[in-house]
Length: 98
Image (cartoon, rainbow, N blue to C red):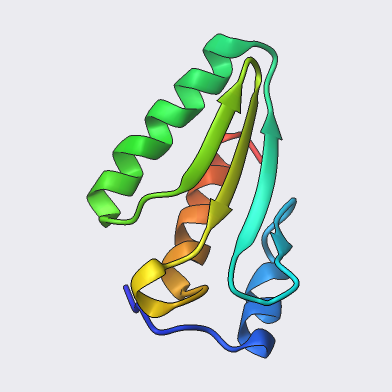
């Protein structure tokens, strides 16, 4: 998967099919908050994402408090948002059931 930085127009276009994700003001990352029924569901989601992220060699910035998982995606070595981030966001949405 490409690690070339997306320009703002490409980033905005990629987000049209990604429910719940927001583009940072500087266009360099996307973020979303996932809320689950309980801690176990949140942790199961994070486990599924961790396995997928490891296969992609692309790891999210995230935090978890009880049933909430906050995620920010960008590609550090590209200096911003890439197609790799969009692909991981799509997987996360599928894993979260939406």
